[in-house]
Length: 315
Image (cartoon, rainbow, N blue to C red; front, top):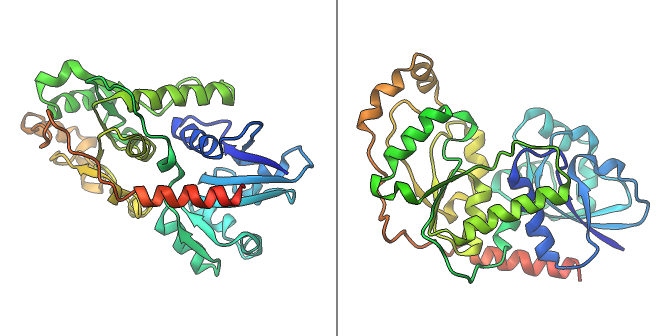
């Protein structure tokens, strides 16, 4: 039986390929197929395929479930927050499909509860990116800033000014800004994975990473890079549900930025530019910049259990 992992061929988010890389490294086998997450129902192969089915699902829920010759092993699985996606992927007609492959390993507690409410045996597995190999090489002194203000919560020019206020001036020359949003989407999946691996290498060698991206913070934990999760702007309950079972792994940092977030009142202030009145009062983040806090280690047993389950499933 052929073995496969999933990827999103049209992805603008490098975090998608980070998950694909984690799956490929975890299986650690040659001749692994890479299937398009959004078109598993129309894959052209007729041979039986064992699929490591992890990650964020999906943009095209009408293309779900996969073809009959694909046998998914569900772990670190997440159903997107969109109503139309959840309605389609948890429709009564689809539930028997999941029951053939239960228990379903879920990336977060909210996804687990969605399945359980539908009568499907499910458990919290954590995220596959926690299994990335630990980095054992030398580190530089770079402080990586990765997408602190997600979803355009602050305009880029102003966001950079805010970041330079949050970081003491003496460390500005050590700052390196990266993003998980790619400009060029006209790349092969192999090129996208190479781009993602280069980003992971950047994180691995850094002295400190500060991010609001889950698939920056989780790999940093796995690779042993000190990381602070920037807990800011997530005003929507759905966003917070997405973090349940994940955010407890991180050391978090929260800035004091009045009226800069995504609540209704913040949007009102930002619409009229009133949030900028508070810019002079922004202070540096309250952390030890010379000795960044060590990462927590409560993710380690989760990662070990994922490795154990996947090894057994694909042995």
